Length: 187
Image (cartoon, rainbow, N blue to C red):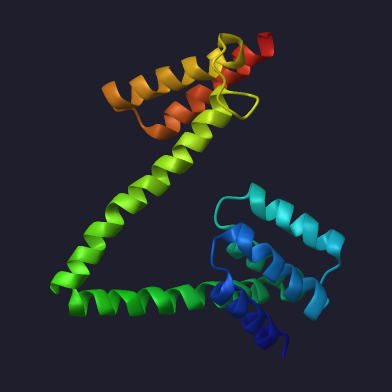
């Protein structure tokens, strides 16, 4: 019975967590702490902290950790499957519809219209990260003292290495981390 409850609980989370992992946190809390009482709020907070530190989506990591805590490795598999199953169904349905209707002018026009919007979303996220990195106060200021020149220098160097020499991005991130550690330790 616990496996069915785990699957159903995380199926609902996977189905209704529109907006990403952080939007899923209240749903996960509602299921794990309030509805089933599988964990205390403190344990839930610890699980979410671990889920944020490990690679991958928060909701799936949380499902894996909660499943492991409740029913071991089999529980982890069931909870994780429950969390990803709705997305699989939705993506397969959309793929079927796309391949069936992809040659229709209206579908092509819709997709062409979505491309600039996706680029705008990515650019907006990128600009937010740039502002947070270059301006420690979190907002753009016109004074030279408000700029984190070390961050600007590391960015410029990383950008040049990526664009000119086409170095593997993992190595660039490692190098930027080492450079940041060295320079900020001296400041």
